[in-house]
Length: 277
Length: 300
Image (cartoon, each protein chain N blue to C red):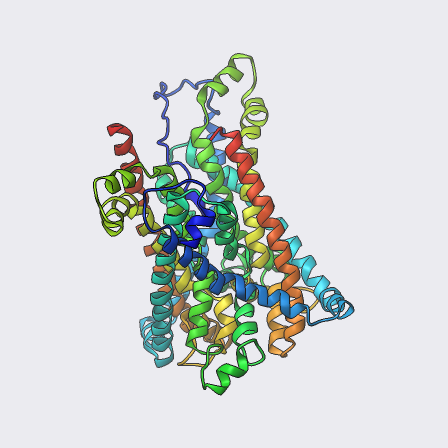
């Protein structure tokens, strides 16, 4: 009753608002908000210099650099190849197209631990692919990049694909009539239309990669200062019963995630506006 | 993730051109085949080879080793725990998803956008942090740690913690499939039913649910896949007690770290099989949703 009287903007004949919203708020508070606030409150038990030391020691900074660098690189590769895959799936017909289309979602469905051990085996020095490469992949920072590329793969494809399907052929025909080459049409007409969706996909893949743990720890080798990602460092601190230290790093990561979430929301709003929906 | 929530317009196929003529909006044949080749090479390296590897490695030492690995006592208890965690967290998130979608899609209230952002929040939190926050609340040094110890209750390093962590990471799946669809459908049908004298439950079962059943199923499929496969969050709260608090992904990790590769891949192959079943079900449900949208378009 209180909820409907204070929050409803417009009276509705439909029943169930109080109980539905009441349950939603209770559930979201118990599962998400209260536990998340525990992280912030725990970090307040540290003084500012203690907090700063916990989040800026050389080992932690090295882990930020690896996590951000590898996530950015993987998201970038996924932006390029995701666009290509989306293009090929929408524009061309070839045998097995529908099967390939369905399999693109594999990284969403395959548990990260399974992906982790499989990628490690393939890219090890005696693995199917690793043996042909002149450099090491498994147990190096490059391995981190490979794992993050795998888990981020569907994001760009799935954000670009529907926009590409909706694209009006007339625009391309007009460009061709005005004498544009196929490449000019792509880079000056099609790509700008796809840009908001492409950036959204990039941001989603990047955000997912920042927090990824399961697929990375098997392939990374986890050497401090070299191939240790930030989420692993949180676990290491927890295992040493350094709860405050672990939480301080977690708070830094949470703030990063919230900034990414904000960016993604803005990008999605931009995509919708561009599509006129 | 939002593939299902985006409009599923059918492709606008152009008329088939004569075999050797190329329209002005098509690339040359060799360009087409090069692009297809590069895309398939990329997908092969990063998707298909890892998938095939799981099964090849699983059977590398023979069927006997495979069967022994998946019928081992610890493996069976891990399978049971994984099923239990998914069996609890999926229904919980289903009820939440329906409640949230009903409130958000059928009513106009203040703070709706904030609520929508909060529902998506668990997707942007690292799984490791999802585990950590429950340790901070229920762990021995946490808010309720002493109280729980005094009452002889265990949440962290026990099954309840695993369930909680699983609920957290799978929290938005069903809600985010239902909300956009129910928003797009509006509330006229429900209002008409109400005016004709239907009760709240009647409206839900006879009007709303039939309209969203495929999206609901879609959310459940994705939610279940993630619940069974979650690793990071569960790893933090599990304590890795063999036969007690090990889920399948954690069991894989233990086997792998003990260099029992064939056994690790054997258990992994079960989860990979689950992933394939998930993709097939997802594909079928997507086809159904597309058909429903087309039918709705024709009758309108």
